Image (cartoon, rainbow, N blue to C red; front, side, top):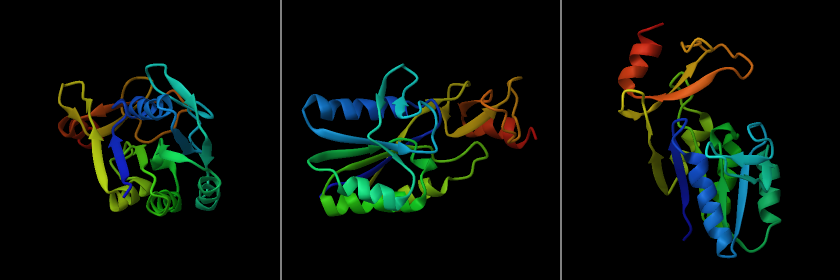
Length: 188
């Protein structure tokens, strides 16, 4: 039976790079891998782009569970479904991916963030944890050298922006729990 696998990590953990490698491996063996990402994820527009410069155009930009269901069931000879930035999907899209995995007996790999920069879990990520047959964490390093578990948001002055959106100039970095506490929690 095919598995629904959730691969998560912080920013800069290499999720998109790993995902693109999976798609490449299927396609190199002449197998059809469907690449999906949320329509609301505008990074790369209609492509998945890794920090290493590798990219691939997506097969479908998911918006609603109904649309995703129709797309998946219109495809034939699918060997694998791979979805990037799943945290930005609606929960019904996660349900559709899981149901497709089980009904069509096609593996589904969902890649995304566990939490936002405030430390709160994304609803779609929670749903992935609830449904996943297998869960894998990709690690990123904090500046101190420990495992990054939190996504920290910086503004132009490299300080916590306290949630203020600043039209693309903000940057994110992974932080361990200790550094996150010192900077984001205690520092506010």
